[in-house]
Amino acid sequence: MTKLRRYILAGLLTIIPLWITWLVLRFLFQLLAQAGEPSIRWIAAKLPDSLQTLIESPLFTNLFSILLVVLALYGIGRLTTVVVGRRVLSFFEAILAKIPLVNVIYGAVKKLVTVLQEKPGGGLQRVVLIDFPSPEMKTVGLVTRVLKDTNTGRDLAAVYVPTTPNPTSGYLEIVPLERVTSTEWTLDEAMAFIMSGGAVAPDTMNYDEPPEIAAE
Image (cartoon, rainbow, N blue to C red):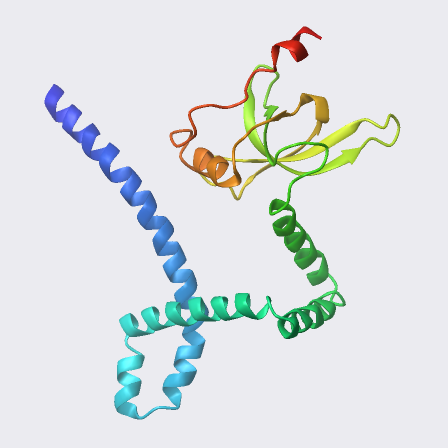
């Protein structure tokens, strides 16, 4: 019975990472396939019946849909690097800015994506540690911006705290700048650390305050 339990546990520990990886890849596969499927069906309607049967088969539709979406994303990315593409994007954003609610959602998401690509102010790194959920514990957070208290002028950091293993959900904390500990981690290293439950991470981190600061 001891060996049986040990082998079953070993099997579970082997299959769980593979299973989670499969779930993520399947989600991305289905997302891309659904995005490209209408275009594939429109193309199939213009072709002879013999080719329609081939194109509308599930395997071909899914694979070609993914290829179409990837090519479209590549084309959009290349287009935004030239003057004409930037003008088209600006025109599109101007239209979205006039639509109630849509302008708020689009503007907030675009701002977040832009912010994460830049370094925050106040001499901070993007990836930091803060006291959360109690002063005796620390967690990894991402600084989105630095604010200033209206009454005291105290510097405050807006820190997004992702959850494990799904970093798309989390908490937004307002933390005094002096209570924030900068790390040397990159955004990719922080995401790997969070999604793996701490199993994937650099060997070192800036957890404790330097001796000269702690003495003060």
